[in-house]
Amino acid sequence: MSENAMGSTMVEEQFAGGDRARALARDFAAHRRKSGALPVAWLERTMRSVGLEVYTQSFSRKLPFPDETHERYMVSGTNVYGILRAPRAASTESLVLTVPCGSDSTNSQAVGLLLALAAHFRGQIYWAKDIIFLVTEHDLLGTEAWLEAYHDVNVTGMQSSPLQGRAGAIQAAVALELSSDMVTSLDVAVEGLNGQLPNLDLLNLFQTFCQKGGLLCTLQGKLQPQDWTSLDGPLQGLQMLLLMVLRQASGRPHGSHGLFLRYRVEALTLRGINSFRQYKYDLVAVGKALEGMFRKLNHLLERLHQSFFLYLLPALSRFVSIGLYMPAAGFLLLVLGLKALELWMQLHEAGVGLEPGGSPGPSVPLPPAQGVGLASLVAPLLISQAMGLALYVLPVLGQHVAAQHFPVAEAEAVVLTLLAIYAAGLALPHNTHRVVSTQAPDRGWMVLKLVALIYLALQLGCIVLTNFSLGFLLAATMVPTAALAKPHGSRTLYAVLLVLTSPAATLFGSLFLWRELQEAPLSLAEGWQLFLAALAQGVLEHHTYGALLFPLLSLGLYPCWLLFWNVLFWK
Figure 1 (cartoon, one colour):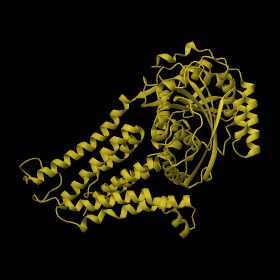
Figure 2: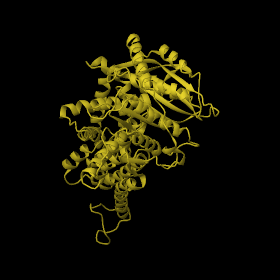
Figure 3: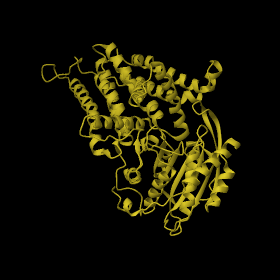
Figure 4: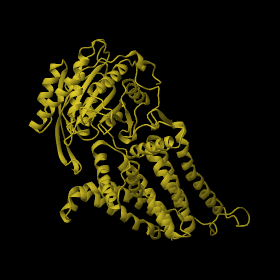
């Protein structure tokens, strides 16, 4: 670890409240079944009994269209949180232990362990930071409502009551999900909203205490490679690295921790896995690992900053730093720059009227020097951008109209409208340049491709800097066909290649690759249904949490891809 204050040898874990955690989990589950919702009164009473300051927060959210995955549309709920005040410092800094409770899973064992840890922490005198014990309703929606209220912002249109109690600035957070009293391993999730990652020291801290307590820890649900000298170890590491790339590229928060990262709070999600492995661990072992992590985070004098924020993980014990993987994306973008330079030189030579034999001429015969007719580029540029704007705006705005005229639900109407606009873009733009000008057709498509190459390079460069995995996947698929696209030669082959490397096709293929790496391959029909569900979830998560994948593809990369489609069918 890079942070000196987080050495694990100075901490001796003392948590022994496994029986209490199990009893509290049973009580919570019973009250939840009885009330049919989060037992707010029971949680308040239990947290007060262990000596916490207890507060509640109510929230509500109307989703842009029904979420068929979780079967919800009008969502309202209550978050409950208790604050353990630090006896040795002012309330200027805090740590968070959160348990999300969704409608489909109660997560009762995690709630029981949270309350047992709160009782144990209350009896210690060494805390220098406040500790917030947070139980949220409706999974990520409750977490987003609480975070927005805590930081006094509203970025997603959430309606919530103001918080009555606050602690200090949140330094780190751990989200806990347990499916049973016994676990065979702890799986850690690091990918957050829009591909953000926590500081690597927090991940190293988790692994350190798992090793110290003998807990089996996994990444992407898979065990770490043991033998790196044989071929199996690197291949397994590559599989885990590709899984992380696909998860990060999706931009989805893979756990409640993903929303904390937006507010510069380092966070992880720990999931207890109960499989058929022989060795199992009870709640005491998990509680000791959490106690050790919080005690070491309690020693921090400043925010975690000394280790990496940008990395890829082939295993928990190994990482690939930004200095190693960024050149791969740089070389792909260099292809676009060199191709744009080649087109610019060809246009310049044609513009000064060089003879074909006087100097190295362009590969395509050019007419004598004429005006390029830049007006002919305005129509394809504007119409391509308008198609992207329609793809972004119309599916949600027109869902009710589509549902009234067709026998489909609102969520299905959104997806079908997306597909219809996407397909319509293939037919509309590529003849629009003819309504303005037909002069210098060769130089017309060359100028359009030059603009499209620069546009694509700028977009991919910005995406790579914020979400490397997404930028690299898009660059690896779009750059080769973008460089090859031209209105000469085999147009059918180029058209097939362009369609296969379009943003939608990349998403479709990524789903198959994802399930193949998880060793759960899809049939074509199952892949299509998963693709439709992914489209709906992408739009929903953008409007609900602020995920940027949908606007990036619809407002940026899809119009840019249409420009290359325009180039291919230039006449």
